[in-house]
Image (tube, one colour):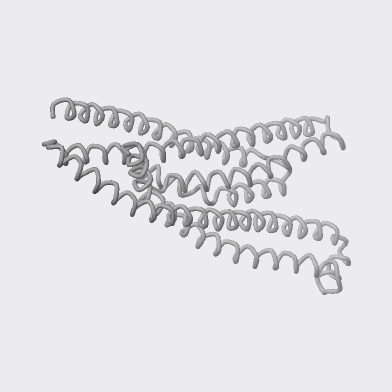
Length: 309
């Protein structure tokens, strides 16, 4: 019975954290809904520009006359592609948020059932302790509840740490791809270029682009896991930027393509985000150790009460 009660205590103690995550996800959903609407409009605009140049229009006629239609068309297609990449990334994140919201709502439904069971079991234990003549009955129950709350907090911290390490690992992979692309670009600039160099460079950029979408999802989950964890205000401001990482990255990457395949701005963006993740992980690791110390101290108090009662 004692173990069952402790399990129920831990489950019920998770409710505030799950409610905080749900509020965070609902905020994220509103932000991404606005983002998707904005990006859909931008993509439609860019696509119309392409269609005008591909069809019959005054713009098409003008660029044909001055002999620059192909250059202008390539530029418009590039801008339409960039808009579509950003739109696809935002739509994927919105779908992920909806899935996460559904999952947490399901967990909260289970916790509401557990709350009823917990109250019943707690009342039974309280009656049993008082019937046994234990003077410190209320203190024992209070310490057990505090231990359960700290155990639940520790679990949330560990989940956030896991999400953070996963995101940082993906950031490292992006940096590796960008560094490789930069190496091929340098080779190209010093006369070693050709179709093989061009293909190799863009192969690494394509892989980086796919990984950025993966990292955006992991950053969003990391931010969600941190919703109920108290960290410094400055760090919170930095973490808030995680939701726009892919947007900033793609803006930098596509702008760099337009001026000659320079990718240093994109590398700086990833490195900056990786540093933010690392600083947050350092704080979380400290918090996990503090939770361990708190649990150990409470367990010692509980042992002393039981021995001395």
